[in-house]
Length: 346
Image (cartoon, rainbow, N blue to C red; front, side, top):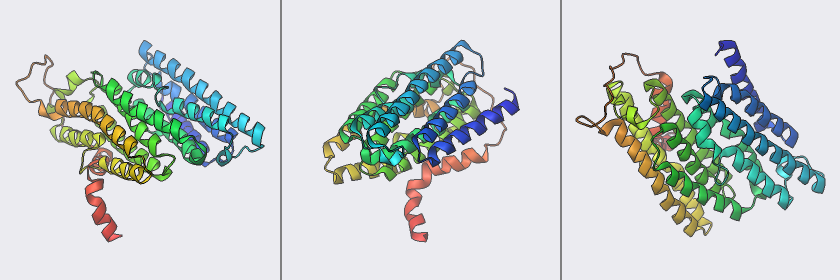
């Protein structure tokens, strides 16, 4: 793609995200979401492959439907209350429609069907933007309206997302699809705590974004898209693959890595809110996603020869690992163990 065009699309993404995050009025928030949707479409379809065009079409249709619902929800609320302010969403029907719209924007179950397909049809860098930056504006809207939303509905959506995200990721061989189902599963954890402690939702999102960025950038460096090529990628950059193993285990939420921190805090908060059954259920459902992370981790470094893959071994690369990957990997792995030391210093 032309570098100037690329720059315009990235700048539009930043603009759309900034508009939505900083707005108080529903129409401005909607405008930001629309700018985001239109800016990401050329990045999804830039390879001109039929699968990429299909992914862009699916993405456009679902996001257009979700944006229409956001507009409908805000207009219904304005009709009944005379308020266009985002934080003044008080009408029950509007809250219900908005929850559905944001669930569709994020890819929460039962509106998740588009997300794995779109991620599979996109390049790794665009997949990274879809999994992290594109989820920030809808998360911000959820954060701002969290006091008005229906707790029962969100808990049901969260538990279904954790269940289906883990269950449907088990049988996948394409890494982008596995990461898509991983994203759906993580969104379940964010949604369940939103009503009770919105700041924890944001913390979970930020840490998820850091860990997912590390995984995508590492896969982009080693040019790996499926499990069969991941089996032989360890010869290309052994140290990078070792760090990928730790990042995947962190994404699975295993202690003492960074990914365990949000889950620990969420379970603690749910128990305080007398929601121990929900906490137990979502913890057990997260074991499903732990399984496919362990499968990925096994393929990353533990599969040493002799093994039965027919792929040729790759030459070891002499390219140094980028600073961004080094910093992100350190944060993805070491944040929880280092946090007591940081708190002591502060």
